Length: 114
Length: 110
Image: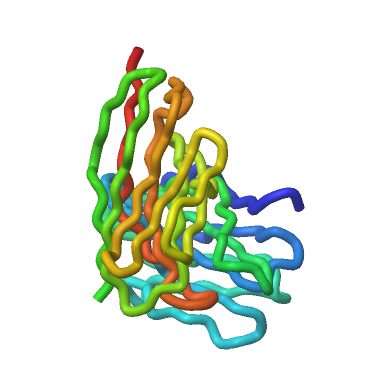
């Protein structure tokens, strides 16, 4: 595609429910990153996929968070038993191989947990 | 640890010049990025510095001093549309995730 796309753009959910956020990276990009942006905070790294390697999960804040990347393309971030502190904008970025580390960002999913 | 500092907010006048500073302390260094982010939108790439010195791109320039752990973004001939958050980010190495500062919210006034 022309750029990174994410869906849904907005998600409102009740505390305790599970949510799935989707990211479609730029076609051919081998690296995919999930970040979280809370109000007044910088982008916080969550998880990173590179090719067929095991993902770097070091940024996931708790075991309620998980992500997968199917076929080296689309990625889904799942948050189980959502809490109010999970409310944030979740941004996905992708990067091509052989380039310096410029990451292209999607528009994000704004998650609100009531 | 990883730490990136930049001012929280700045205000400047249309047509003027503004400099947004960024200092960093990271475990490694493979380049520094500046991104622009308008409210409710995705960050968009502005500049990349990996060697010391000034990189100029139209109205925007970015400077890096690796020995001082310091960068700045210079915006000239400010326009109202430049009102946005400006994010400083460091790449510690290769493909690893970027480390971001909290961003500087720039307001351009008439």
